Length: 219
Length: 219
Image 1: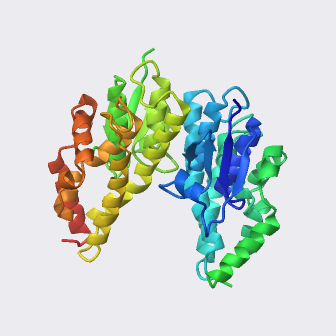
Image 2: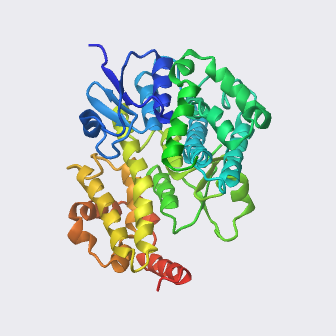
Image 3: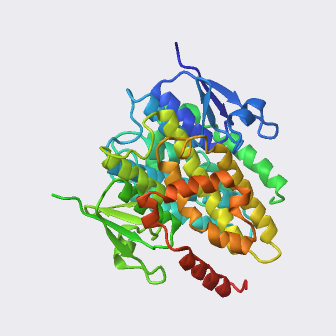
């Protein structure tokens, strides 16, 4: 019997994009269910009763939650193709460390730039720069993050790059001038079909951010 | 050549205790280096330059950081004995989910009870209760967390139980009366040599908390 794979998601979520990329990299057919986050479906509430968040993957009726856990699950179940984590335990630990670093730092500092007031914006931008500088220093010389092949850390980080365009507008800086290595890496990732198909149009992100900033009284 | 394993740690850290338990479960000989967190060693700063935190494991000269990542690393390197994560991908994902839940919720709500002011204490206690209630509901009927054998989620959670005694004093509640299943599970875990050897004397934790609360002007 063929696998039934359903992804409960919201297209603008950097976390949800990670799961889409992993599924496409593995060549897994899946059904994409767009959730209205202001009116969550009964299926989402049933399948992710603890956090009630997207992305939630449903594989043959059983749910897996939290994006990095889902990507590892996908890598372990469909382990006959396109490995996402390295096979060596030390390299796996390093990949988990940097994906965890992205989770703990990139998301927070990105939000800092986008939702900051005029008074906070310079400090917020500096925190974001510190984070990206650390990541740029760790990229290595290969085409992907510390690796010759596209994998776990690339997936965890590239989805935030779709927000760079709006970050540049609101933070008034040029990512390419500040972080040429990260931008070159991001462009390599964007050339992959899995990434190109999963990342939303920057215009849509801009509109989303504008609306949210208005709601927060920032503009 | 024998493995050289060094653990940079602080005995009172619930995160550090996790690594000690995993090393003892696997029967790995290691050197324990107690860090003064007010005056961190050059070795810690060199081996964990990003977070500069304990626990940091050094295995044959290479470092692994972040407690849950270290425990997974230990499980993958010494994979010939006492498995800590299940072999089935779905069960592994579930174990990772609950260990992540402990990280995101138990630590925060424990701190809430310990470092709250009089005015905040009831709300802090309620948040802690909500978290433990969810975990108690998920324990299952086996001797360990959703399992017949001691593993990853048990390790991630049991180290916070050494703080229950002080939580009861400062929060003015009885864990055993409120959460009999969790306390019965904790007692089973405490009977294991790995746990008994790794958890500090509750008296020491009480003294540590008293001192910290004085420093914060809470008593």
